[in-house]
Picture 1: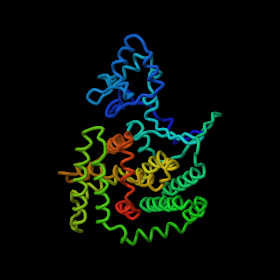
Picture 2 (picture 1 turned 45 degrees about the horizontal axis):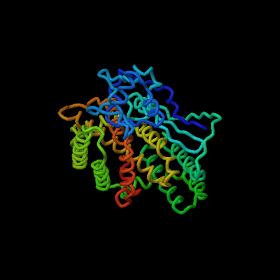
Picture 3 (picture 1 turned 30 degrees about the horizontal axis):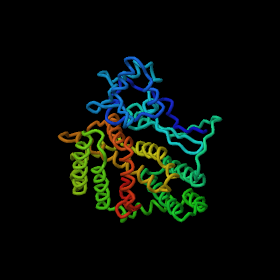
Picture 4 (picture 1 turned 180 degrees about the vertical axis):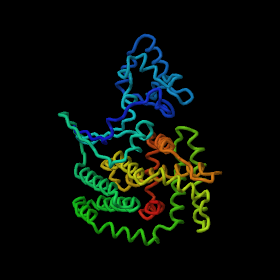
Length: 397
């Protein structure tokens, strides 16, 4: 079995009682069968409490006001303290914030953006992400695993990582090339022409690809503001259909949507004599924190976590759109934070990286920790009339 992790993986340390959030509230904590069996056999006061505080039909811990029954007032876990440490945890509690994607002979492990400590590692990383590999003698085989498709997906992902991490190019250009590559890869998959992928990859490795896409971006006709706003509005509408894990997110999201579209309208109506306006201040605050490196790191994070999963459904383009859209929505939610911070000021506000961390974490908690929400977003993004390559390209800036 081979294991792959981002290079900052081993730097993770749980903040425990100092964490500004808690991983034991706001979602249902599922218990794996092995842990359930162990909990049934536990005796004494802890065993009695486990018997009462587990929903045995749903295989999860009970919640009170959205908090796990074992989460105490100090935001620490009673099961940990009373059960002898981490050995008392179920698989979910033992692994979070680690996210594991399993393939034949390979486990890819990432850190979840919803965890404050993990988010800081992801967002504060300035160097290009490297991936570390380790192998042991354990072998696991999956029946009917499409190894050829998996190889082409991982080859494509490695090339996309290379494109996204080429910091000699504008980030908008890197995004455009990456989106188009995933789109063209999907054409090969649909045609059952995986052996054509190598030629496709060679075309995207050629130096001329940058000039070709730069001319497209300079043309502007594909990326008019109206198409961008229309696509962004359609994305926000998808959020209306998602399962709500924390009620406060719905209010935050709707206020952010209003702020962003008003901001876009103000920016489009602005003339050259409007320098120093609230819109300028919000834009400057946004760009100071949401840098090209942040965009790059978020794209790498989502693509590493989800793109290779297309081996199970054949939807590489869908995984790319999912990853890109997550970055776009985090970007726009954070833009709203900058708009609010700039209101009523006559200078550029200081909107911290910690604010971005909180915004990204709120979004990731709602999206990544609900299978229903992930499936819903992917399903909605399949509507090519609303979310085609052209629509995705309109969102790159």
